[in-house]
Image 1 (cartoon, helix red, strand yellow):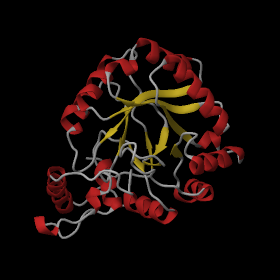
Image 2: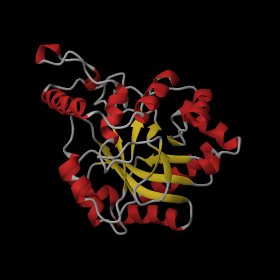
Image 3: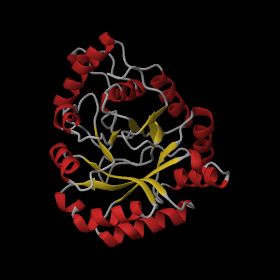
Image 4: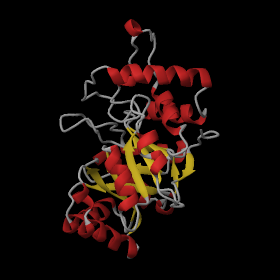
Length: 288
């Protein structure tokens, strides 16, 4: 367990200082799922100045977050920010084209963490694609490379077989989905890549009580993030808070540090119960 997470941490062996909560306005609940948070641009600015959040997952389609990022860049804060983005099409040309579009529309000259998004098969990161990503890094257009993924076995395989190895992994991990602990975290190469977790609330399912199953209360969103960040392997978690007040609540919760042992054990039992029940995807909570 971590001694206690803070809002600023270092992303694996990359040396990049990130916030342990990363605001994101994207859903992993499938094509019909909603976007996560749609926090207005001025509140993205507030999150940077008042909450200490320096890291943002953003694509040009995330209009509000993108505008908030542009405002911070224009105000001279670029060197204090970490921008994470992901290309969704595993073609070398599209990797380069998306980088160009993203930097142009966000008014950047470099992306800090560039991912291949939603990797489902090994060919997504075949030599031509991974090579194109490496070219961007070698030319100083990207600081760290990696991929987001749902398939745990494939994540472990790629993290150990790619040459050069990935700098960052973004993967699912929460109290109901803990398979990454044995299938990925124990198999990470050295030096350790940075790990960003998503779906901390399991599409909102972990926020719902199960009184008929012996759980009069579910987890709060801050507890979900505290649980995820409590694992030594995890550096940061995507956060889909829908409002500034929710984001503030999540940050305050994370600053409390790891869950107390009794609550942690209860959360494990609760997570197992939620995992056994069918999931209704498309929750309005998305990342949160």
